[in-house]
Image (cartoon, rainbow, N blue to C red):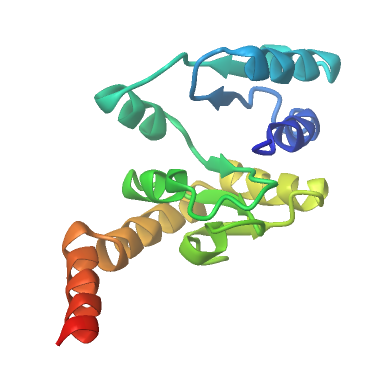
Length: 170
């Protein structure tokens, strides 16, 4: 339901130009993950898909830092995928879809890219661009970090709640 099949399809095209590309899937290897891996094997990219198992705390930070690009391939109305902010807080560019709340966090062409998950070629092009253009990837990652720090910090969120509370009750 989160768009993994679309990402696997993109991976099957990416390996043609970036043969050593790896898709690191953070999460436990459950029934959905098994279907995802079976589809990857069907498309001959099973060896390019790695599952981390369940990660917590510092382990998940290491996974973000190990990534070059973070993909959030939602194909359902995920209202606010926290993966976007987690990736940006770790200085990583994000390629996310136009479905759901990712477009509220990602600044297209600045902190990452927003793509249509059904336009696989566009997803491939954006992923390839950030995987091969180190300077751009770093620039987008730094821009994402600045956005999270500026617009989504705990202090900023507390100030917004205080403003709402004050307006509603005073």
